[in-house]
Structures are given as structure tokens and as C-alpha cells.
Image 1: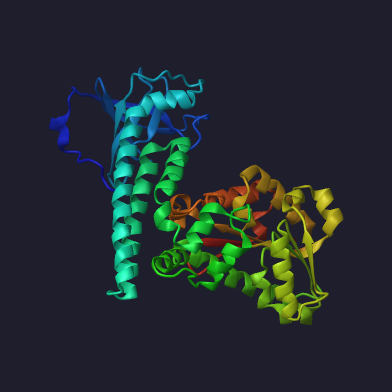
Image 2: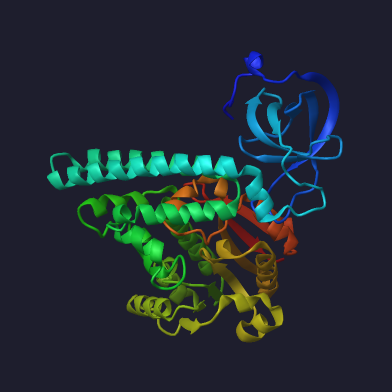
Length: 447
């Protein structure tokens, strides 16, 4: 972590600091401000003044984070103004706040939060607005250069990519400083409105802003990502190309290849396996394993709530030679959380999988669903669960440039906890990643 301020700037302090040597317990606000975390973090109080404290802790803190102390301090709330990495620990400067009505067991609510950092948020909004205006002007200049056709396509694309990366950095910094998700969501909507004239020229970006099918991640946009071919012309061509070259887009293409290979191996090693494909979409992963499905005598049931996706998938696989081996049903996959109902409708399965559906489900529901799917497996049956690891990509491309925030931001430790809460034994798990490292596959075998 980069140092936000030098520890040597002692002479710039406005208030006299007194040395301290005692332990303090603290917590940080989560993304939802209606609920505060418990005071489970601790550190050593180094010094204190009328307006601030310096603490030493094992946890990295970010500028702008709101921190709450336990009863050891008279003033119980503050803003992290700097944090320095000291290799074995972190040292942070906290500006104490006296204008917040706070108690450990009291919900400060959105209005209290706004009053607490209103001035800072207004300042951050101004900074983001300036960055947005600058970005739009840059893109307008680049668009004119595209029309002139005096530069090579790679040079133009690199220029666009650099400009977008700069505004993405500004968006990420805004999120880091503001923290309040309600404020951040409003800023994202405002950003997309202001940049609509730029990005509407991209078919792919525009579709991922308006979602004409009615839900995020529809099969048509995923097919565009799989094909990896821009559809727009002129300036829009480069914007299409930008989105299909993002980290997650690369991972989505690798995910489908990885899943196809897993399915091929599993189907060929089983006799007449029953396979359940949940939220099947266009079933692209099955295209390459049609011969194995036919040769093994497999029966594949594909369910989705999108009639268009089912018709597309059925037509595609029918043309590939798959007939009675595959069945397609319009079915809301959310109903599968009920084990008795799921078992009655689909029976026990040899293989159960889904491509990206699990990323869109909240933790508590996903725990129930995975528990049901695991119980539906026959002995030695396999559940294939794939997740995006938020630690491996930048979410701002999907939360700011487009309106694609439906897939939740989870990390490897979150997936492990969900699987554990679902009652799935760790001995049943085999973990692997796709080539990009973003997608984690869990192969879960029922013993």
C-alpha cells in the first residue's frame, strides 16, 4: 500500500500530541451504513491530540474510511487521513470528529452519515465531475481523429484504452474515498448519463447499459463476448473492442472453455449420466461435447427463465445433431432452493452445473441452493460451481462504464464460507482456476 503522507511531517501538526501506550479496539463501516461491524479490530494508540490520533495496527486502512473506537476514547469516530506501510505493521493518522451523534448501539442512518462527511463528499463529487468533463473532451478529440483516418487502428485503440483507464482510476478513487454505497450508486448513474453521447456509439456498451432483454447478463450479450468480435463501426468499433478485451471478458471466454473440458471428461467417464444445466442460457459449453453426450447416452436437462435463450440453445444443439438427448424447460432456477420440490421435479443427478448464475445470488440464498444441489447428487455425483474472484479484476469497468453490477463482488474466502455453510464437506472439494485466474471452479463430489 502506498504511503498517503510522510511520517516525517510532524512540524505541520496544528495540535500538540501526547504520547500514549494502550490498546484500542475499533471497527470500520461496511458498504451498508445501516449496520455497523463489531469492535473486533485492535491496535496500539501511539499519540493523541485535540483533533487526532495515531494508531499502529496489523490492518491496512484507506484514506477516507470512517473508523469507530470503543469506549476507551472520548471521541469515538474519525476519518482515516493517511496510512503508512511499515512492513510488519501499519501506522495511521485519524482525524477525530466531534460533530457526529454516535453510540455503539445506535444506527446513525443515512442522514447522520451525510451530515458527517457532507463537505468531503461534495468535494469528491467536484473532483469526479472535473475528471468526467476532461474524459469526455478527450474522447471527442479521439473520435474526430478516428473520422480523419490518419492514424493506425492500434494507435487509436491504445489512446482510447489509456483515456478509459484514467477515468476508471478516478472512479475507483471516488469509491475508495466516499464509501457510502447509496452515494456511489447515484454517482455511477450520473456518470453514465453524462457520458452517454460517447458510449452510445458502442453496441456492446449501450446494450450493457439498457439491458433490453430485461435482465443483466442475458445470453445475447454473453454470445457477443464469446465471439470476441466488435459489431459497431467507426469510433464505436474501438469501444466494442475495449469491452470485449476487459479482464472479466477474457475470463468469461476462458470459463466456457474450462467448463467444456470438465464436462467432456465427466460425461465420458460415466454411463448414461443425468445432467442438469441450471440457467443454461445459450448452452455454448455443450456445443463442443455433443459427440460425447451422444456416445455416453447422457440425458441433459437445460432450464432457464428466458424463452429466447431456450429457443436459441435448442436450435443450436439440434443443428449439431443433439435431439432426444437434450430437453429444454422454461423454469425459474430460484425454485431449486427447495430440496423436496427440486427432487420431485428433476430427480437425482450425476452432474449439476451452472455457468455464471451463482454469482448473482445473495449469500443466504446461495447457501440454501448449493445445499439442495449437493443433496440432489447421486453417489459420486458432481456439482460444478464457478465464481468470479473480485480480488482479480477491477469492478469499475462494469459498475461505471456499463450498468452491470448484478454479479456480486466476492473473494475466495467468501466462496469457501458459503460452501461450508451449505453443509458441503471440504473433503468433497477440488478447486481450480481458469487461465486468467479470475474464475474459480469448485468440483464438488458427493461421496
